[in-house]
Length: 457
View 1: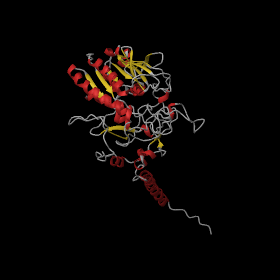
View 2: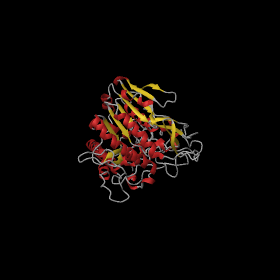
View 3: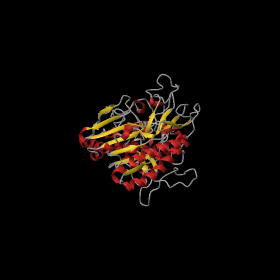
View 4: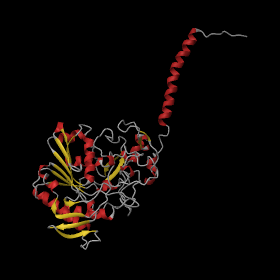
């Protein structure tokens, strides 16, 4: 039997009306289910020990870091993040000791140099494609570093908030001014970071370089603002016999009674200066005074008196600070403390590695003995110079980035100082760099601190 039944017209219209009402409700329910699925989960990065944080994160939506990955913490609802990121109590455990030689500030003052690294979902403001100033051996992204979690942290001082570096405001403040970063390759690393951040407003024009590209200058035309990097790893006059990989053919010849004219000849023309030294004093060196051998450091084949690192560094740094104190400089001078390397299971020359993939907490890693020696000298000599600077009307500031940097063993190029080091052999033996910093990377936070010191003292 065949039925040719058809609903009356009114019923058909009601049926369509019901569908129009029900379908959106069903779709909305499905959307809410997807949106809140797993919203109570704790992000893996907060549960996993620091040494095991190697899980593959999710795809980044920030256009600056194309096809890269973001830590799982970015998937957690904001309400959960705020709970997880509450300020930790000051540790009382013996293993959580404050950094030796820390300078404490008076009541009511915030110490920008004491704190922790917390997640920063917004990530860096530049990358290797947007910034043309990154040198090859710090270009970790281009060189194939596979993880990206190291890009998503920011420095949080313990007792205050630290504003993000504002490149537009910085350039406005620096109109018709000059900056100079004086020191070793870490200073060169730092100037690249600063150039990259400022170039989000205006690209810098390269206006000078020496034969080896160790001394360079850039200018921001719209602001008549110049930045220089001056290669002077000892601050004193020195003859160095070393190649790109740090291999020396002879001891450094260091004149402790003569400052390096590369920086002293231009110092009076510089409005803002960051001086730093330290790392190169661990190298084998012969020390001179009045052009005569005074002694040495690690020169067993020479019949010279072993004077050691502390002696030479103190003499050199004190001489540099005395020059500054006598200069009547009218600008702002920062003395940056030595930043630690993170070589584990060896050193630069004997297979040391830096395989950690996340920041650490205060007390989880100690400064190495050599870095402690350098730091003690720096703090003692700065303290003496600070008193005289105040009397002489000089604006001399301590840029104590040691602790901030110590907590970032994940921020170095490691094997990715070279382009695609494992492309042909995944087990290839590659020189690791656990001293310099990836760009972008933790070193960008140095500029946050510097800007705060500039604006608010």
